[in-house]
Length: 507
Image (cartoon, rainbow, N blue to C red):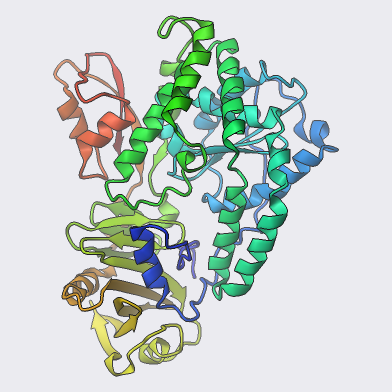
C-alpha cells in the first residue's frame, strides 16, 4: 500500500466474546488474505532514546550494557513500539513525563537502576514495563489522567515490577510463548496477521501474577509518598480507568486487550489495599502534591484518539485524509478504528470490516473477487458495478452460520474491501451493504484540508460556564457530557467554578 495506510489488515483475534465472534465470522471469509504490501514490520523498527528520566540521568547504555535484563528489554522494545503505533513525539509532553519519572527515580529502591521512558502513540489506556528498566505509557493514559500524581502512580507501579525483578520470573514463560508463536506463524496465511498475533503474544508477557501486582502496588505507593506525590493517586486513578472501561464497553463486547486493566486486574480489594498503604503517609486529602497545574499545562494539545496516519472516526463516518477516502456506516453502528482494520458493529450481530490492499497486477475486479481469497464465495453472485464513479465489484458468500456481502473498489493502484456479515437469513445484509457502497467516495481537496486531529484542550471555566455548556464544546463523540465528565474525573453531581481548569476534546 502507499503511504498513509500502513497497518490495516484482517485480524485473527480469538473469538471469545460476541463481538469477537462477529469479527471471527468475517475472518471465516478469508481463504488467503493478502497482507498490505507496505505494512510496518514488528521487527524492523529501531529505538532512539528521546527523553531522559531526570535532569541528571545516568548513562543508560553504560549502566546496563552487561545486564541481561536490559538486553531482554532491548530485544522486545521494537515489537512493543510497533504494536502500539510507534512512539509519540511532543517535546512538552516528553518533558512532563521525564519530570515525573525523574522524581520517582530519585526514591527508587534500586538507585543503580536506570529507566527508559517511551510514550506510545496509542489511544489505548495502558502502561507497562520490560526487564532492564524499559517503561511505557500511552498517550491515551496521559489524556485520561488529571494530575501528575496519577501518572506517577502508574509509573511507580511499573518501576516496582522492574526493581522487584518480576520480569525475570516472567521470562520463564517465554519459551512456551515462543513455541506458540511459531505455531501461529505457520498456521496463519496472512503475514501481517501472523505478526500481529506474535506481538500480542509478546504483550501477554507484560502480565504479572496477582502476587506480583500487589507487591508492585506496595512499592509504588511507597515511592509516591517518598517522592512527595499524593499517595492516594493510585486507587483514585484505578477508579478512573475502571470508569473508562465501562464507558468504552457500551458495546459490552469492546476489545480491551491492549488496555491497562486487561493485564492489571482492578479488583476492589486491590484498590482498598492501595488506600491502606497510602494511609501510612497521612490522611487522604492532607498529604502529597497532585501536580495538577503543571500536568494540565504539559498535556494541553495532546493528540487524542486516532492519529492522522490511521484516519479519523467522526460519529458514524470514517475519513482518511492520506488516502483521500471516506464512508458512512448505518445509524446506530459504532466504528472502531483498530490497528488491524476498521471495524463497525451494529444491531442484530451485524459487523462490518474494511481494509485496503495493493492492487498489484490484478486484472478485472471480478477476477480478483474469484482469485481464491474469499472462502465460501457464491460465484453466480459476482458482478461488476461502479461506486460513485469508481470501478467496483460485489459478491455474496456464506460460511457456517453467517451470510456475507463482499465489495471491492479500486482507486489507482489500491483495492479497498468491505466485508459485511449478518446471521444467516437476515434481511439487513443488503441495506447495510448499500449504505457502505453509496457513501464510499473520494474526499475533495477542501475536505482533506479541513480534516484535523482531535486534541486535549485545557480551558478555564468562565463566569457563565456550566458542565453542560463546556461539554457542548466536545468534538468527536455523540456522548459529549459523559466523556467530558469521564476525562475530568467528575461524579454525576459535579459542578464547575469560575477559574477552574478542565479538559475538553476538540480540534
